[in-house]
Length: 72
Image (cartoon, rainbow, N blue to C red; front, side, top):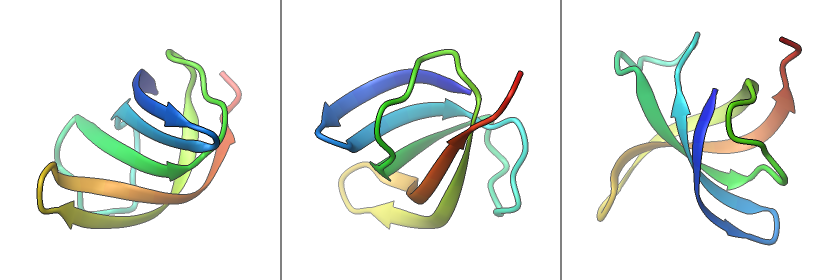
C-alpha cells in the first residue's frame, strides 16, 4: 500500500510503500519504491514488479519496472 509519494516528476516516482506480500527477500514492513510507475494514489494497494538495489545515498530500495492497481 502506498503510504506516501515522496517525489514525482513526469511518470517517475519515489514512494514509501507498506509491504503486504512479496517474492523478494525483504523482511521489513516498509520499502522505498522508485521508477516510472505513473500516477499513484496514497492509500491504494499496488503490485510492483522490479528488483532490489542499494542506493549509495538512500540505502536499500526497489526499482519498479511495472506496476498495477490491486482491487481492494
